[in-house]
Image (cartoon, rainbow, N blue to C red; front, side, top):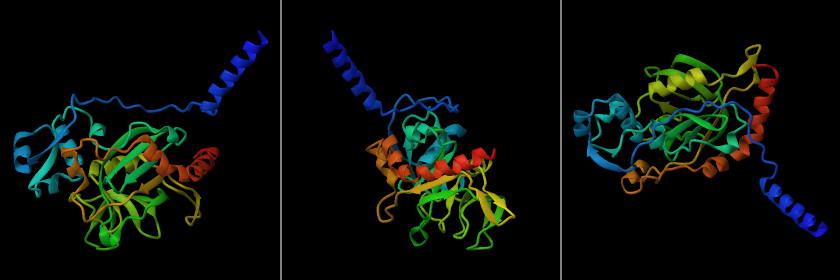
Length: 281
C-alpha cells in the first residue's frame, strides 16, 4: 500500500509542477459579445463597385479597417481587399488575439503592431478595442518599445506643420512629440512618427486611457496607461494585407507572439500599475 501511495504522490507532484503555480486572474474582465462571421476569406474588388453596392455602415467600417484607411481616402483607391463575409464583428477581421493570458494582471494596455498597421486595447488580457493605424513613414519611423500615456488634448497643432490639426491627441513620448491621434489614413505608414487613427478609435482611446499624474506640473508621479509599439514594416513590399486574398490568416498575431513582445516590459508595467493603485489613482 505504501508503494502505491508513493507512486500516487509522485504523479500528483509531477502534474502540479506542470502548472507552475499558475493562479487564475481574479480581476473582473469586460468581455465583449462578438458575432463570428460564417466564413473567412478575402478577394480584391473595385472600390467604386463596392461603395456603389454597399450602404451598411458596419460593413463599410470593416472594409476601411481591413485596408487601413478611412472614408476620405478609400475613394482614392482603385481596388481594395474585401472580406467575402462581412457579417462578423470588427475584431474577427484584424490580427490581434481575443485573449492574452500574459496580460491578465494588466489593468489597461494599448499595443501597436508596425507590421500589420493595427492597434489593440486590452483590459486584464481581454481584447476590448481594435482598429487600423497608419504609423511613421520610412523617413520618420515610429519608435518602438514601451511608452506610457502622458498628456492629452482634444485638439493640438502639429509640430511639423502648424496647418495640421490633430484631434483627440494623446502624447506617449513627450520629448519626441509622438502620440496617437485622429488624422487621415491613406492606407500605408505616412506619418511623421505619430500613430494615426480613425476618429472614432482616437476618441475611444482618448476617453479610455489614463494620463500621467504630475507633481508641481513638472515631475511625473504616476505614469499613465502603458503603450507597447512593436515590429517593423517592409516599405519595399506590397501592402501586407494584400496577402489576405490568398492566405486569410497571413497577418494573424498569436497569443505567444504578443507575450513575446510584452514580456520584457511586464515588470515595469506592473510596478507602475501597483504604484498608482496603491495611491488610489
